[in-house]
Image (cartoon, rainbow, N blue to C red):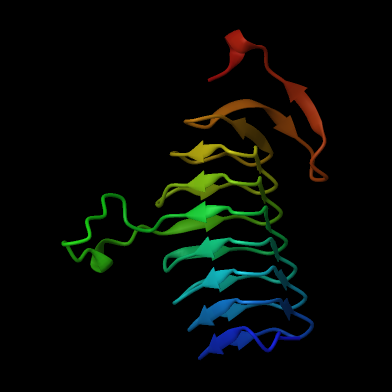
Length: 166
């Protein structure tokens, strides 16, 4: 299902994927049974695995890979050039960003390019991720800091006190 207000150009879209209103997807690969919310921009050369849920107003730029079953909350932002300038062309300096299987990215978080978000990691709403996040780790803040561990289902199993935060 692709809403008539959306543009999908030169992209491979998996069976059962739904693309809602006002999206622009170009030169990307999107897996099966994904949900792409309204006003999402994807591409070029982005890879999105099966079962991903991308909420409204998310922009996913060249250099980003989402593995299977990744959740991107509303207004998640990915960057792809570390030090952009309007007057300097740096598209050959794109840093790869990988979000591993089952990870959750909370609403309004920002993912600085060149990081890896581990399997089933959980990034809290509004966080700014500037370095890699290990598997099953809960991070929050600006810059994002580890405050606990989560299960595959996203339940907090260990929360660190303020003194224990790395």
